[in-house]
Amino acid sequence: MTTPLMAQTPPHNPIPDIPSYSPGLEGVIAGESALCLVDEGDRGLRYRGYAVTELAEQSSFEEVAFLLLHGKLPTQQELEEFRAHLQQTRTYPDLVDTLLRAMPPTAHPMDILRSAVSLLGILDPEANDHAHLSNMRKAVRLLGQVPLITGRAYQLMHGKQGGQPDSSMSTAETLLVLLTDRKPDDAVFTMMARVLDVSLILYAEHELNASTFAARVAASTLTDLYGAITAAIATLKGPLHGGANEAVARMFIEIGSQDRAEEWVHNALKRKQRIMGFGHRVLKKGDIRSAIIKRHAEQLSNICGDTRWFNIATTVDRIMQEEKGLHPNLDFYTAVVYLLMGIPQDWYTPVFVCSRLSGWCAHVIEQQDHNRLIRPRALYTGPPPQSYVPIDQRH
Image (tube, rainbow, N blue to C red):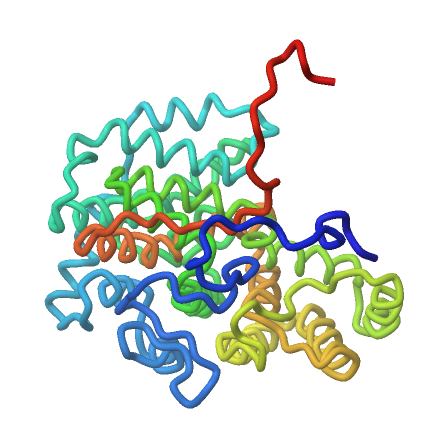
């Protein structure tokens, strides 16, 4: 069906030198970055040159965060010092606690995080210092504070006493203790913490996605790092960017069992219903991160003695590839592991924030270290030049 805009003659464009328009900026090179290579070929997905497959297998989220911020893998001493700094910052001002307690029960978790990060910026005396070292210190503080704020906000919103993370815990262990009923002495806690750590590595960075681009645009104005991260969180809240793994989990729960999965997917496709967790704007031939988290999802399912979610997922995956030629993205099998861990579904995207924060901060720092205001152009689609008509002569 032709829309009114499409039916019109080509719009008057007073800027003839503007390059051809790409809706949604798809395929447009909007900047340079040394942080992440997203490639479907042999180069794959790399952070600072390192294959994400190797990082997920051999490193930790803290090591990856150091890599993104500092541009190199840490030595053992550097990693220990970095972890110590994160642990020291795992606290927040009393006023932030007051804010969390004042949130209405209907508040969206991402709105809570956005507001809390904004308040941290108000309270930080270094907020408006854009020097490299100052931004690095603020990034480390946020990496320590946001997981704690995420967990505390969940507990306050749901009236839970919850576990108390030990200061020596990793980011993944901290989130697992705060967001679930898991305790460090549970038989599967260590395995779950490792799988959660892998998911944080995989979510840490992915080039100029919508939230990262929002952070860089904000940073290019020389706003403070907190303002740029607030913009990123607000952007990630949108269901076309964040929240896909939450939607996948809801789909698995609705399907309920493997023997219902095939019929459920076929009926959904007949209704033209979108099946969440498939396809990617850039990765048309598949997402290497999905294959990584799928292996961990299978292992964790077997260790937990609960293969229900994994069996549903593999059935849906098979049918979507057969019927639509679509491959799962990272969010798809991540939903399996988060369901097994017992992470509340509404808090999947805040967990994403705790990971992607490392990439966002690295992008903000990179932007402000070599800044140029990001100011693109628009293809004008309005009417041709008009003459002003006095109000008493208008019809």
